[in-house]
Image (tube, rainbow, N blue to C red; front, top):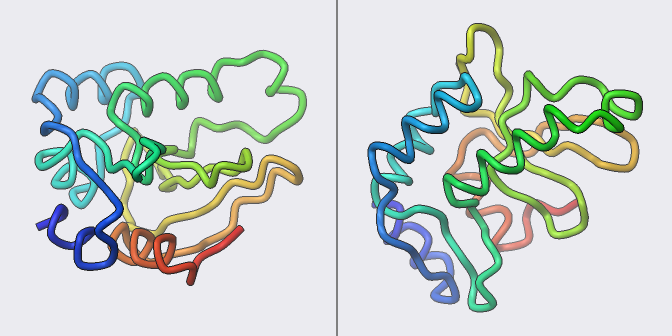
Length: 145
């Protein structure tokens, strides 16, 4: 479903092998978060979505762990920005801004809403009602930062 959806918007994206069960469980272990159903279902089809230059539209599971861990643990950022523990990053805009879900409590993401974190002013702004809307909006330019 996800591959066909992305291709229906643009044929300039390619896909990787599906994420393994171990890779998905590692996200939960390392970041203490349950993946939202829509993102989990995407990972069951492909471990990330990439453009023709291999830049990710949706990060791989390993990049999700690496980048979320970095933002949550980098000491210098603790003085510059609000805490990142309530954000689950899964994509970037290529300019330093990151796209995320909101983690509400106990590692739960209750809504499919997508936000953008602005690295310059530390704002967190709603951009899409779901992963589908985010993918369509970003590829078509309806969403911009």
